[in-house]
Length: 168
Ligand code: ZN
Image 1 (cartoon, protein in one colour):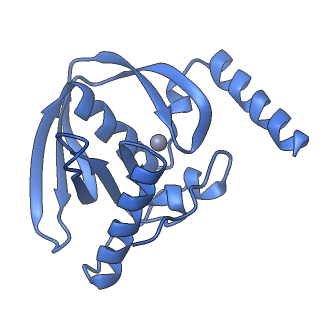
Image 2 (tube, rainbow, N blue to C red):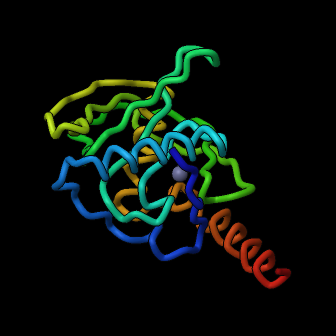
Image 3 (cartoon, rainbow, N blue to C red):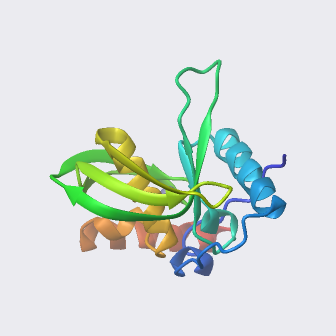
C-alpha cells in the first residue's frame, strides 16, 4: 500500500466527469488499497478516485466501528437511485483545504454500486453516512461541495485560494 498525492481545487481532474470502471482486476484492488491508506493518512472519512488524479468512478468510504478496528468499503460505479428528505450538516473536503461549511443534502438515499469483483449491489442509508456518500459521488461528477454553497461564500473561497497561490 502507498499513500498518493491528493489533488486540490482548482485542479482540472476534480472538475471532470469520471469514467465508468469496466475492468475488475488487480490494478483496481491496488488502487483501492492506496486510496484507503491515503484517506486514513490525511485523515478523512471518504475519498474519491479523482482526488488522487484518477478520473474513474470509484470511491472509498470509512466504515470503521472503532479506532482499533479500521474498516473501509470500496464502491465502484456508484449512482444514487433514490433520495428523500433533507438535512444540513457540516462538510469539509481533502481537496478543498481550510474550509468547513454547512451543506444541504438529501436525508435518505439509495445507492447502486459494484464491489471489487463487479457484483451489483444496493445500499440504503440515511443521516451522516448518506452525507458522506453524496459528497463522494459528487466528486465522480466533477462536483465539489463548494458548488452547494451560496455564490458569495464560494467566491470568497476562490479569492482566498488565489491569494494562497500568489503567496507561493
Ligand atoms: Zn471531497
